[in-house]
Amino acid sequence: MIKEKKINKIKEKVEEAMKDISPSLRADGGDVELVEVSEGGVVKVRLMGACSGCMMSQITLKAGIERYLKQRIPEIKEVVAVQ
Image (cartoon, rainbow, N blue to C red; front, side, top):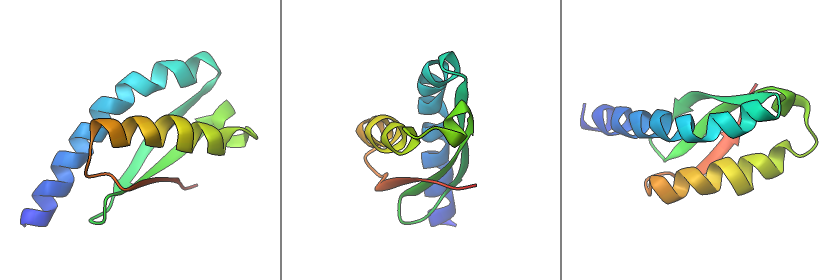
């Protein structure tokens, strides 16, 4: 139960932080959606729109989204894209 509460709290923080990220992605025709937050601090996201097929999506994911989320939420260890 404690782990679930901790994960839910992290999930809320991620959702709030993603509100800051989405406008930049939408400006380029894409977006990002939170899929899951795991116990180990791994955040799974889905890149959508133009981001889903962009050759630069891994750079956006790691240098943009992951870096921003890790700065705001220290519990996050990694951000990965899923389909």
